[in-house]
Image (tube, rainbow, N blue to C red; front, side, top):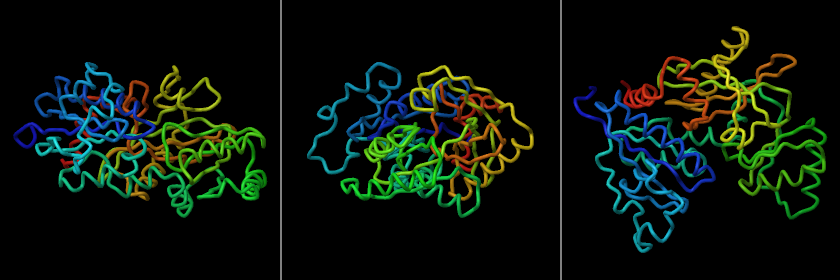
Amino acid sequence: MIGGKKKCIGLIFGGHSNEHEVSISSAKTVFQAFNAQINKERFTVKAFYINKYGYWLDSDISEKILIGEIENYKTKKQETFNQEKINFLDGIEFQNVDVWFPLLHGFNGEDGSIHGLLKFTKKPLVGCGILGSALGMDKILMKSIFSNLKLPQVNYLVFQNEDFNNEEIKNKLINEILNKLNFPVFVKPSNSGSSLGISKVKNESEILQALEKARGIDQRILVEEGLEVREIECGIIGKSKLSTSEIGEVKYESDWYDYDSKYYSNNQITIPAEIDSKITKEIKEIAIQSCRALNIFGFARVDFFLEKSSNKIFLNEINTIPGFTKNSMFPMLWKASGLKIEQLVAKLVDISLDL
């Protein structure tokens, strides 16, 4: 046992985010992994559920949600804390937590918000810090940095805080897409995850609706050129030294890799991906380079496109809190690399403690 006593892991999940349900599924997997026989001698887990309204529930209720005794949607706003309380952490016993493990996907978590809060507790956390999280969540800033480093990306356009009530501006945006990108294009909110708010646009008539959909999530919008590609993913863990997992490929039956195909479809997963060893090596090198560029460490999943016709590699994005659900690639990638989920969560804690 490291450190002479069990480490208390503060597992934070749920959150005021459009990926609330995914976070709960991820947390259930991680909770079970920490409670596996191999980890019981090293760790205890204290759960912290944040409901859809942003209120923290105590650890007893939080654990019951993880083991299925309470359904999360029944924890309503009025059942949480007294609205007159100023400190939203009143009643939350977190002083004995040794290491934080935030599993808040999307807004108010993966964007660095939770990392900033936890920094004031002066306890280590699993994952990267505020800067890396914020940059990894923001597709526009992330792509701008990658462009400066000349990392390979598909062609894209950026629209920030445009006035959609102005017909002239809307027509200007549409014309810019038509003149600079080839169909199909993908219209994405700059800050979101799990493909929420994203549309695949095949012709001019679909552009405006896609822009409005993305704008419903974020005022800053990214438009990318769509290519005929293979979806390639690589896991990263480490701190001063980053290690890469086996490379994986996802093949899906849907038109594109949307929310339903990520979480509700029986996709074909191939690990290691059937690609040339030279391409594998290059993908791993770009994965590490891109994480270093954004100050991302701890753990992450780096996503790539591999163009079918040319075998050209395109860096897509980095997920700083990748999913741990039963359909999530990150734990699958590391299992294929020799780390079962029980070993993986323990390894991530060790990394956070510099062990």
